[in-house]
Image 1: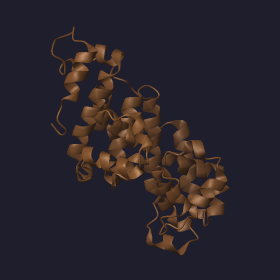
Image 2: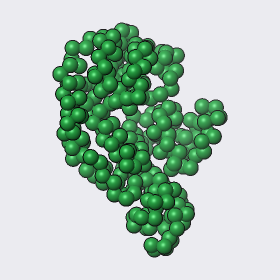
Image 3: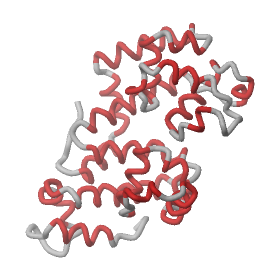
Image 4: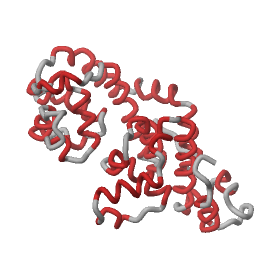
Length: 265
């Protein structure tokens, strides 16, 4: 059961400081506990891509862990992804331009019949379980507040971002960056290399390896998110700190001040 503290700013900071407790509570949910126990007991017997995609419960657990639960029934596609040549940039898993599928393929590289996959270290059972619990927690949180869900997802994946392409290829990462820097939807109409250069002009990719700088970026994201949400901006006293006045400050005033915050400040 997730909580909502009246704004993304407050809720995200709560979950950031209480992540271990929140994940333990998520793991204890009856359905989550059953699915995890089944995965742990049966994944060891899977030795091929066919074994994997033909066991719906195992596949759905893994797909959920990598943010792909809506694609579980696309078995033919998943099979091609898991069999892709990870050393060939023209293979299907790269053509999809979706970081989630690439993460899935790398996590289960031990099942890949292509020899190139041998150079990748497959995810351990515990790593998949941890990803599943984090994804489930974020999904539960998102039912009450999308902003907190996005912030938690970015926080979890920031260290894996290697270029602007990583952000552009993940809709949730992109939404955070788009919100912080007020980037237009129309950006998608220009050349992908230009998009990548623009993203990297805004985000120092190296900074994403530093949890403190990621936290500063996400504080800014959550404040901006709230400032563009009238109900949150008008009810959360934290946001009033970003406005010129007291309780009568307008949402537009808060938005203006928040957008002036310096990254990492």
